[in-house]
Length: 584
Image (tube, rainbow, N blue to C red):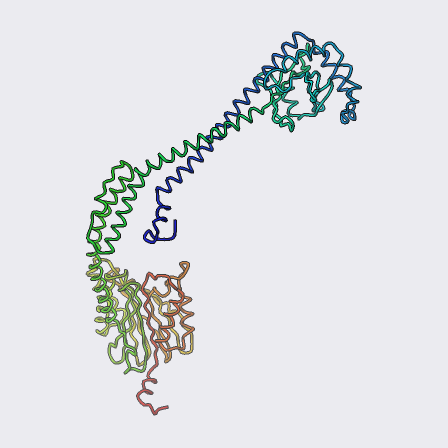
């Protein structure tokens, strides 16, 4: 099929690639193949039957001649004498096979009365049609030779008594081991006479042993000529029948297949054209009147149903598209609201030079469930939150905003982190029919001392870097997730921050980021990326981690939100330097 659309094809190309042309070509090719197969089968059966007829006639002739010969002439002494003389020959004489050797050993047999009688009897059978030669001979198994005893042929091919010629051992065994049930024969291709079939019957001596064979050579030339004649007559007949069959089949296929399919094809093109032009016509296929009573009629009915279904589908799709656009608009608005709910100004607290903080959130969908938060409880305490809500999408976003507000409200009441988590958990569990939960790490930094009091509700381990050191994980005690079970208590612990120390918080979307081959980013890669940028400020460090994750993931779609936060504690000394720029 040309690499063109149907509209780009010329009329000649359409006809060349039409179903009618393909049906015609397929019919011709199928007829040729069928004709060749039939010819081979017919030719084989014809040649086999004709050859079998000639072989049967030759065998019957040998039987008649052997029977008449046995009744009129005692062949056994003659055959035994010639074979005895032949076996007395030396290997050198057999190899030489000269006329002098044959005259020396076998010339005396031509004067015997039984030899003359045998020639007379055999000569009577030489006149039968298709018989090239009929003669009396004996196979010698030891030398794989055929030894002639009496040959009535008076042509140049005449064989004297004792003449011999080599034959195949297969032929020798076939004749000497014949059990009398089937016709025994051997077909050879003679350069002079063409294909000859040698068949015959044995003459049995008084001792029950085979003494000689009456052999008949039947020419198969007529079989070859008959095959040639059959071939040409059959070929002409097949060509006539094949062309007639192809014409009738093509006309039938045109009426029952190609014309209905062309009608369906035209209806499909008209349908596509009207759709492109915006014409509101929906009876292209329903107006077809195809009554073939087969799959083509079913196809026209299916196409009619499809046209009706597509019309309904387009109407539904228009409604769904409008609804989807509305939902997308609302999702964008929800994403904007969710983003605005998170601190996104840098520097976040320019009036507090004793610390620097930066965070980012990248949802896996338009709206996600991860969130972070940081705010001043008072002028000397900074609350830091990193959380991951179960699930994705709108439900997770709603649960996230509710959790964020509850955590912030509890934190502003000067509670310990463990108390904040406990009270938040109890409040959420009191009305959590959807059984959603959130993992939370919450810490409160004392700006004066650099001590962070923190509690963990099933969240990832934080990573800390002390001044001039490397990042390492703080394997703190994990409490149960918020929203999982009411009445739980959480444990506080302390992190001592020195000037220059950094604290890195994250959700599981960072170490579990998917890369090529289903490999995850992992905690080890995260720590390596942190340590490769541990001299950067908090914003540069977060951006470096984000780039490392993106480079690792490549084009792999992520299934989880990625949220990170970095806090650097600068200490009160930094605050005094900022207040007195002349102090060294």
